[in-house]
Image (tube, rainbow, N blue to C red):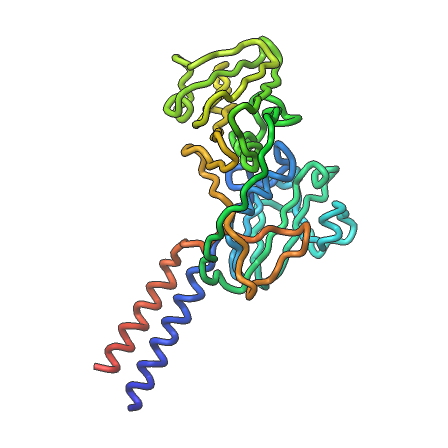
Length: 312
């Protein structure tokens, strides 16, 4: 009986380790973009955060050059107003690792110049555990609308974007493109151009046989059929440096992302047992991260073998 109790205790310890280890993940803020004033404004970090699940014990890595950027944790009110006068903490040496040690909402900004006002800010919600994957809900139908004109990149325009391809990937992320909509590529004639290409040419930045090439800007392009559209700049190595756009166009009001983008659709809101974000704060996370924790798993396996040896 005593041996059985010891075995059960060991197995429970294994289960506890496995439950907590799978949720601990290192998140590089902005991925390849790093921590800087993002092209296209704050939507860059909003989009990045929508693709993550943050759990107590996870680590945020703010990649920035010392002297050029900094990072401060602030209150929601300071975040909304970009007020850096009384931060919860301020770190000026990069790169900087921050461990999420409690559940709740976290707000980070840059205090330099007007960096926060230009979008260098991040809001996230941290959960006590990853929890079960929320059950999907049927999407709410979008009301019918007429053709919409989209300025590609908004104020950024069509050029080699600072920070790379994520600028146009971020710009397209929250938009629904329908047949009849118009893309406006704002560029200066002689300095930029725009070509529509195949997916293969888009992925490899091959501009030798474009579907069409336009060298006079600004240029308006009407989306006249449903499907995936791929655009690149053909000058020098502009495409390799991020001057490329992939979108999906649908004939109805339900759109899916093109197969080239790695941006997943944000998930449904988590169950009521998780903390609810304040209005205007961080968005709800997508389904549970599947990142393995191999080191902890090795320890857990050892404990399990010990438990079994005690029983037998």
